[in-house]
Length: 403
Ligand SMILES: [Fe+2]
Ligand SMILES: [Fe+2]
Image (cartoon, rainbow, N blue to C red; front, top):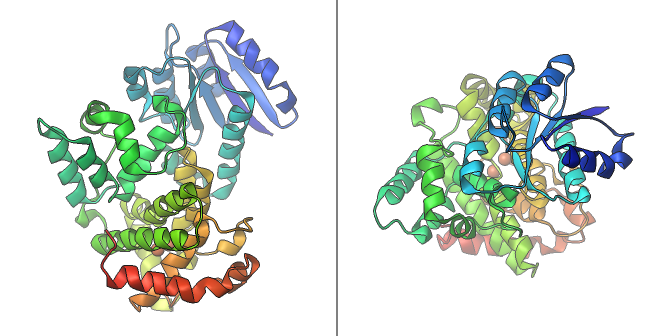
């Protein structure tokens, strides 16, 4: 049974949570602590999967507790449930909390958030990898774009529009701002799936504080990263985003689906950046094995890490509370048949765009040419759309309309 630790200094809040979550008692074991210290004592006695904590508490506050839990129990999922969403509080917990919920939180939302955290835990079997991902504050950014963003934020008349444009070109920065605005970190109630919109919601001052003092973004140095060609991976991500968007538009899907498809496409290989930065030698080994033995990179990554770059990316983005359709698209972009969907979804656009782009460039993905999953597309009743999608991809790629 999964174990959750709730921490709040107000007995009434804890009683409320206990009452509200009573129906879940057969699925979850729940422990309720009234202070940070009490929580740490409980943690020293048994293992927990998820921590849900208040921010303002006398003695050890939420931010201090989160820091301690991250240090001692890095594999736990850390969620803030707070009534105070002042930017200062939020900024203190940005590096240590995976998600931020606002009080009062409706039971369904809380259940969904916790259930999702559990489902993610099952996605990765390897504990050290889980611990590593659970500690990560960022997906590394392209050095060039990181420098551009720094220059913009440091200048007197920094423009949120220009900042938004830079962020929307970088998978790492996009992932982080989507985490901040999709979680209730900044109290934004609606679903956002465009980095420019996210930057506008956050505003230049908050972005400055986040980037310059809390350092929510990090940059990947070329020298650190032997297993991937950064510029090439960046170009591939931008092209996938452009093609996935046009495929979604050509299929006349709702705007939200098209936006999610674009974001998911930009982020689909983010797991590769994470592996290349944090486990460079092993990732290099996976790349070399794929090349030498003509195997798909996913297979050799699985041999080396027990997980693929798709699993790693999806795990991290799910932990950060990004919308489900985006996480699903990242998780299954190489094997869409494993998803449960039966209609056109962001996953469809990302899978198709990824394959058509490799096809167009006549690239083999390390160990051989990747193909469209015809069974999956047939099941969706969309196999006859392939020629039209191919036209769309060609138009975007030959027109250089990938930015
Ligand atoms: Fe991939
Ligand atoms: Fe890809």
